[in-house]
Amino acid sequence: MTSSLGQPTVQLPRTTKGKRPSFFDDPSLDQMMTFLLELAAEVSVLRARQDTVERLLDEHGSVTRAAIESYQPPADVQLERAAWNDAYLKRVLRIHTADK
Image (cartoon, rainbow, N blue to C red; front, side, top):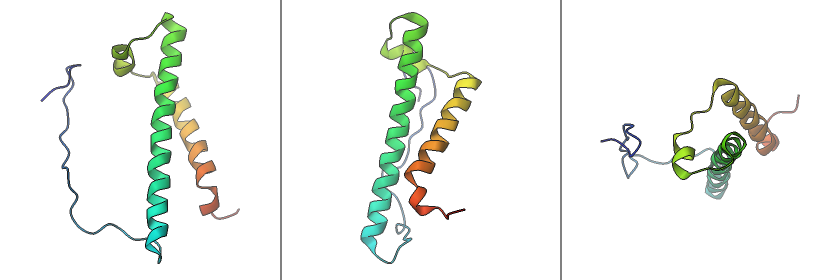
């Protein structure tokens, strides 16, 4: 199966098998950490998408959904985004890291 852009699509299973991992004694803490990490991942994805829109606007003056979906960031942009993600996760998770 291929997407509308001609790229292969991946079919993921709709259900997971096995028990969810547990990291804290209190299950509500595990739920909150899951929520935090999922929200952080969504913010990261939205940040990358916004960056794509801004770069396309700078380059072309307008943007289409197809241009956003097909955008392949060059290596320097990938490095810039990776640095942003690293700093972002350090800020979000700073309370969980050991003080140095």
